[in-house]
Length: 512
Image 1 (cartoon, rainbow, N blue to C red):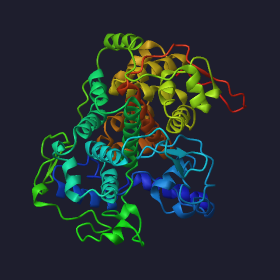
Image 2: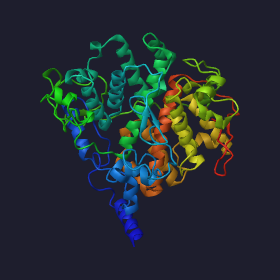
Image 3: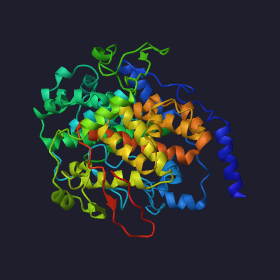
Image 4: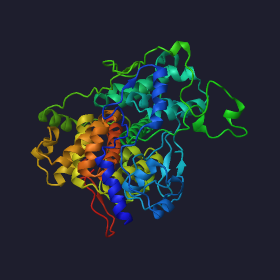
């Protein structure tokens, strides 16, 4: 009887079309142009309606989820990602993780311990200022129009001692910052908005102010930021109703900044704080200006991705990718295996993305595990994953990732014509694949370019579980594409590497 009620609830949710007030009905949420309008939309995210239907919780579910039983985001992971991280802050026995987490590295660059779900450890080789990484996360989120994440980073910046006006300057006048920060800010914008335009010049500019390890740290951090933006926006996570002001640095206790420095200009629990007259009407210099939308002080959210190039151009770029030089040096084979113990499960020559991550023993190991888990775990088929990898890498012009996707598709007996059909209009594919392709492409493009209507359609034709897993996979691929292309990795040898795990459930890993 309980199962029948759960199924009825699920079907009713879908047939209702998630009717309760989706983002701008089923369109793309506009981009705020001014700081007061940004704050208003930050506050509005508290009451947005989630996009993913959830079945009724059983008593057993509640016991497993513990304190997270009423968290929409935790329940999405629990029901559709087999519980990975569902118990991060509660009961850790929710379920055995079987799907890669949408985000393997925290916003501040710390690595997440997957065995416990909630431990965090700072990589000993990280040297970037944490405040700079939070500022970069704010910029990434502003470019992506992820108002959920903007709100969190604003509170973190306040907790780090930034004033309201200093935060406002991030959206307007970078000349007020030191040259190193300005260079990093410009890279963050391009890294997020135009990954298809990466060049040697981008890294050369950073090398004037940052070491190779700091550049990689920055790239890994911002790749994680882009993943978080995509996850939060794709499933439409509502903002914490107590969010705003100093809410992110904990309750006001003895010795806390909130108690030592009470400030009526920064109240807890609301983003609707006063704006200085200097910034009340100032238009953002970060967002891409387009036609003014129906709402005042906003513009339409747009994408700058060009049309896909012809097949012969792609083949030329993949050929050139074989001999290009990485933009920061890679670790050699022996040092990589020493730095990343997880590589003991791989035989053959290690791929270049692994040799890149080996520069960081803690964060690199976490990212390595996350990428392999994204490739190998979950319910969506290896073919669908490879097809999505191709579609996303083509859009990002991530040539290293594209070559890897091509090899995976070839090993799955896909012909060149079948592979390049993924660049077309997809009319020859079943409705399910078309809906999932469209979902991944738009989400990979920019988080809020994916509309509520497209998510709803994908859920109807493919089911909520596959939709959530495709969203999770897309966040991982978007991160991988940016990491490997920003740092110009050359293609690996085509024989790739194979798993040497001998367990009954292990399977050979496709070339990577």
